[in-house]
Image (cartoon, rainbow, N blue to C red; front, side, top):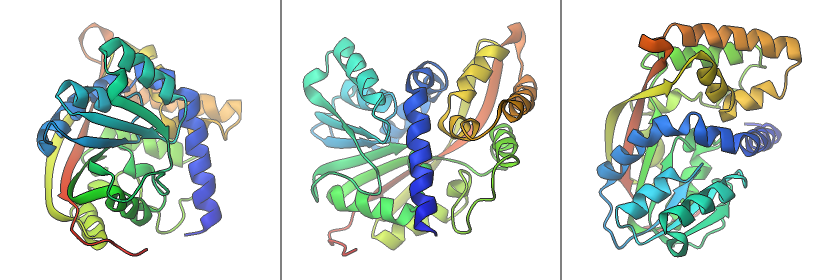
Length: 284
């Protein structure tokens, strides 16, 4: 893949997530709390554990881990504006001395080799243009036999409403470069297992998990989804006419999932993954 595309892609994602951090925290993030709790159960980390919460977003996974007795968390994200949100929430929860925020690119992690007992990444690895490089970095910073736990989205067929929204965006964007997986490729049978195995991870386990995005009404649904990184990144590239056309199309998708009282409930399917680092130190 063209390096310039990868860098531009990451730059656009960083800009988008930086701009929407607060709205993400109040918009889509609350619907993902059940995923966080299930991922922590699934990985079953010992309490005396130092973890890296990679692509931490608003810090929900970090705070849930600390609530479960995890001893220390480094929360890392490419968007620096998530730092103040996380610190504010850590103060409220009384965890200030057990958590630290670090701005970081998952393909070039600013951490020492074998620094962490576990790395958790909820819907973050799907935004890496070079997945092998990101997985190599995760492997590098894990201690031998350390655990990597991740949540990715299932296939497009398992996520029809979200896939439809993504298709709306893609219809107004240039074609994806060959070799760059879509958000739904990570959920295809064998995709993550092969990618992890190629880097040296072992003892692969997976679990499918149902997710529902809850919105109080149609306007709340649109506000939440437009303040999601991929949508915000796309919107930043378009003129007002295109933005309005995309908004109308996405609102139509939301309206298909209206329930009693005008609420919007959008179903989705996630794939939870757990693996262990081997004993070998990989050469890049």
